Length: 472
Image 1 (cartoon, rainbow, N blue to C red):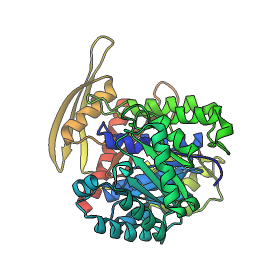
Image 2: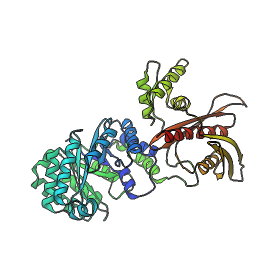
Image 3: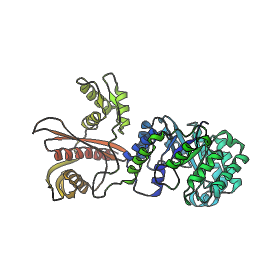
Image 4: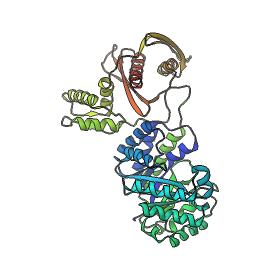
């Protein structure tokens, strides 16, 4: 294998840490940044909710162009099928099988005896290998396992079709030379390891993860798990810097775009460190990331549906046809339709439903020395409810009042305002995208009052969610 593979586990570590979760859009943006940076592998957390997580993986798969996209499966054949269905459209898909190999973790985490674990490894790795040639076996807590069992587990995974084997020091208690010696002993006892890629993952318990993973590379490993920011493991920036500075020790380098490393890591840090303000309906930590796409007159329905999927929409055939026809109407007057315009078209013509919620009235008070306050009356199946809320601005307060009435917070994936006419009586158009159960719903509002158009757009998207939930 040429060069060193850098496998980023930032999103896995954030999910594992129990911190506030990244938004759907935040995960998509981090994946794009890592792909742009040139990391070899981008690792995602597995599927816990089949529908929403499957859409997350599918959306990221369509956005990642050059990196391997790796998703773990549970220790069951059913999980392999579900995960592969979500991942299969990735340009370079990888399935990961993580199995505890120490006695403590086998009994307390998986409640399996050694023989049962070996049978499970064989079955699940083989099921993954039937679907993709890129299968990674991750030996969790390998440094505290029984040596004979660890070797048998690795041999079982290799025989079943694993093409990458990752050795984990989950305790993080080894020094660099100890970990290198541990890895060297595995190469000696398992000759077949020389024919596959060997990866390493080290916990940073003693602040030795960077040193241990560099030592492992010198001992023959060719893939290292790192975090762009935070995480109890080796640092992407540090490992990249060492490989770059001592290139003579690492044939082929790691393929990262070092000039962009600092800037991209800074962007990822910003995305990971900002969280939704509980007093605001807006989800923090997401910048404007409209896909760079353009539809032209010769594009058919399939191209329009593909562009919609890149933006996170899953349109049925009827809505896809309606959106395509609307795009063709726009293209009679201009050469290209971009992401922003497609967003507005989808909001206007896709999934048009009867209004479950209707805005009866709203009053907004705001000023330069008082907090904005919104008082909304919204009817739901004919019953009027009121919401009163303060916010950082009139739209912020209005959306909070809607959340108060509906008793639900939906992730605000995107919010756009633009003028559609000119002059002092100009009409304003607002597009709101809400995320519910892994699906995007767009709402559109037009009014001379920009707050009014924003409320209309939010309620329009809300009606689409309510309709689908009622139909489910």
